[in-house]
Length: 140
Image 1 (cartoon, one colour):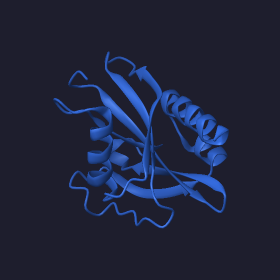
Image 2: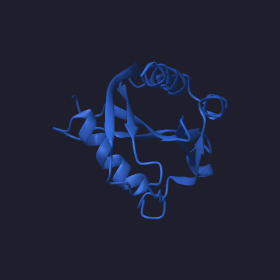
Image 3: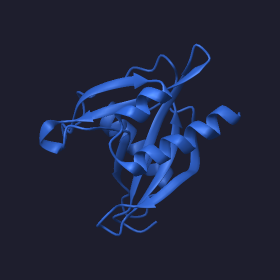
Image 4: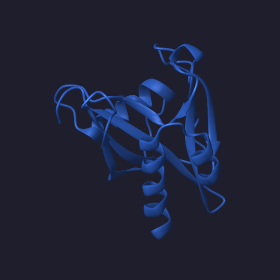
């Protein structure tokens, strides 16, 4: 994958027979909006490798149950860069921590059900990625 492209890792867990999605709130200096985990795909990295690295960097999660590839992809407005959307399943009791993120880009985390997540997300690409992931998950 070309350097400069990005991943969007929608972290989810199954709890009480329902899926919940992890959203992170950017700091005010970085826009103050809710979003899934995002990050640049580094040189010679696959989108899956980038997602694993970003989960470790942003929320200190190393244990991943599975990755759903090819959920969605779109061009980031005004940049020409591609954002590849993946679904990343973690254990329902996995501890999430923002404290170890050296970039301090998020100030809050929240597990939400699909309908609340749709209302909280700001960007159309994030919303479409979540809709497509939810459709995949609810077909299983």
